[in-house]
Length: 413
Length: 99
Ligand SMILES: Cc1cc2nc3c(=O)[nH]c(=O)nc-3n(C[C@H](O)[C@H](O)[C@H](O)COP(=O)(O)OP(=O)(O)OC[C@H]3O[C@@H](n4cnc5c(N)ncnc54)[C@H](O)[C@@H]3O)c2cc1C
Image 1: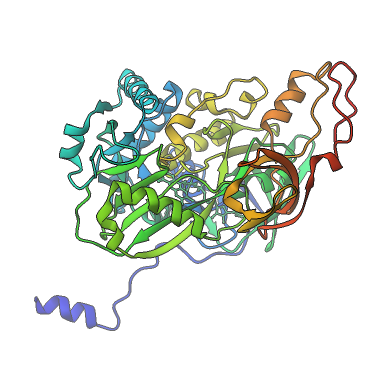
Image 2 (image 1 turned 120 degrees about the horizontal axis):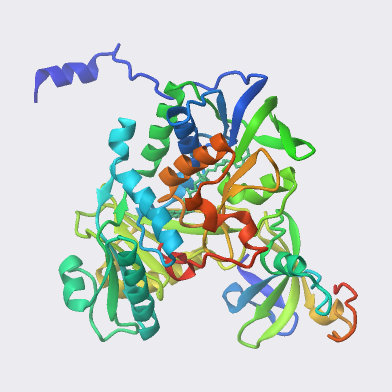
């Protein structure tokens, strides 16, 4: 081993520079206050600073940086949705992700694996074909493939017809990827902080001071700050904040659980999802198998884990990969997902003049972190949501114009 | 929350039940506006705390009401819907605001 490396590692005065500054004192006022220091809030802060030159910004995070759903998700990135509006939106995000390590100068460990959504019934085959056609129409790479081709991509997958739910076909989406979720948040935080954005951890928003149609100040456990504009990006706590602001949301807070196995040698390249079996799996760069399913059966403000989740998930997982019965689980956890009735987000303007919303991200918002940051920053800076967010406006519910993505988002997050 | 007491079948495993959402007053079928219906169908109170909900014991299709704490994950009380809804709804008559 090179002696220099050893010397470097043992040299006591070696200091890793602190790239995210410690939480400063709160100033009396900010041009923009961002509530929620998850990936979405931090990305919005980054694009406000870099694209719009707005740097008098405070990000207020009640816990530690990106410790909410950003820290808890299974990091699947894809754009193979069902509605043209959804596909266009998520495609913009995938493209931003592909260049993000370079943009941020920070390695987010973006790993393009390909994504397979299995179909076990004729109805599921029909939905996959539909998604493939919509995707192609929007310029997104997806196609329907059958067991012979599935076997080439995932040789260890059980393709026997002699099981309860045999695999008939799959939607293959080559751009499907995973990334290091924490790195995404840290990269945005470092980039924003370098340009003057203040990040306040352990700072919980406890109230909003409203005058007429505007929020004039944000109350926190560390004091009150006046604000020009406010962006809310708090995932599972969306309703609590909207209650403070005084408007209603079509959101239910429901836990979503996940788990990882002990690390194994690399054997599984693509991300594999089965909607019918309520199960998905990918292998992380550490070799752990990252596994999850659909949300808990009822709403809850809690991040507890349950045995039922693991029992039902594993029953199906062992049909897909029978040899996993020998493997132990290493960790399990949950996050609070902000679920909407149509499995699409709620973004853009609110009934208040200077209060903007990035919510309803449920179980599918990690992949949207870059596009949400970019487009919410644009919304805050110009005061108007751009066209690409129109399908996701809050008012779509009173107009009975939902953006139905259930068929593409309820299990494969 | 691993079990729930069904008013008809007694204590059963939680996996035998589905949640049907919060008990809320339905808009008047004769005069409700689109805005009232949109709110009723799509908007959620999503309260952190004690809520009153519809639940169904699926093997017997028995619908009842449960009071549940959405923070502590505890069921406080379950009872037949008939305890609250004492009269049949007359869809031709003006709405009394339900439960
Ligand atoms: C188990 C699991 C698996 C998932 N898998 C995927 C996946 O594979 N692909 C995918 O695209 N998505 C996935 N998701 C969804 C994804 O994690 C979220 O949609 C996304 O992380 C939301 O980002 P965010 O920044 O909006 O929220 P968060 O990261 O939750 O950030 C919100 C922050 O707001 C803070 N906050 C809340 N209230 C207050 C307050 N009053 N004051 C100040 N701060 C407050 C919270 O502490 C939190 O840090 C998954 C989610 C879970 C739980």
